[in-house]
Image (cartoon, rainbow, N blue to C red; front, top):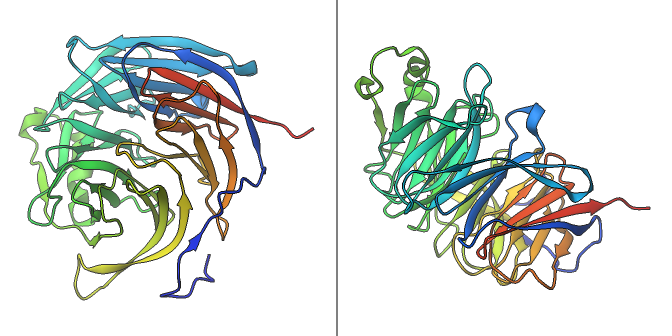
Length: 370
């Protein structure tokens, strides 16, 4: 990736599919009438790489992808509040390895569900408004971050129930936070983006003693000295509208807005003035008819590819680490017409799931070249 010249024009991918990998529909489930906002495979526990969760309305459902396109329902959790509408779900685990499902949405309450017992392990109340995204720290999967309409991002320890850090304040977001992500290898860094059109990178380095303290805290979680992180280390305005999904690609950033493309860029921080910096836009991955907000892309475990749906029920699968970008496949089915809110790529990218506004889940499987 080092052949980019600073200040050069971004490389835009061609929408002609390369036919590098062919996918076909192997299953379609109608989960219910309410829109499904999120679908996610379990990447934190290698025993359950083929297990995924969806959220829609006040329900969290867990499924398993089996051979031959089969999708088996494993369990389902219905929230006690029938008016709850979950927007996001993430897999995490307790320090003893118990798999947890973490869900949040309209009510601003995070539900930590023990996937073994199907019971609520904990509920986290703290956000003053709805939760738009939850992500798990891959290196320490009992740490999760949540992005909220209340303009803050919070870091939680699901083992002890503690809110460790709140990323908000003087340098924080000025509108709803829509997406958040942990850096894949730098345990101190997170990125967030939202309705103020900005992407912000935050560092937890000087607060890390509080993160460590959260694992051994024995007093009430409410007595923990939660710290505010008021200033990000980097702020970028790469998009001119809401930014509703951002993911690290190594030290680079993938982000999207409502302008029919995913953008790959490099944050260039200035050491002398923290918070300021420039964004070097490297590549663009076009996604036609992707001009409504709250559509999120997903990647396989090794970030070789990204899959994103659009408002017409089509999916675009982009190879991430080639220049110019290569469109691996464009997936469409005559009956898939509803907006796709999120996709989920399996560990190796051979299965792609989409969850839709009309309450359907679609499963696409790679066709092995004969």
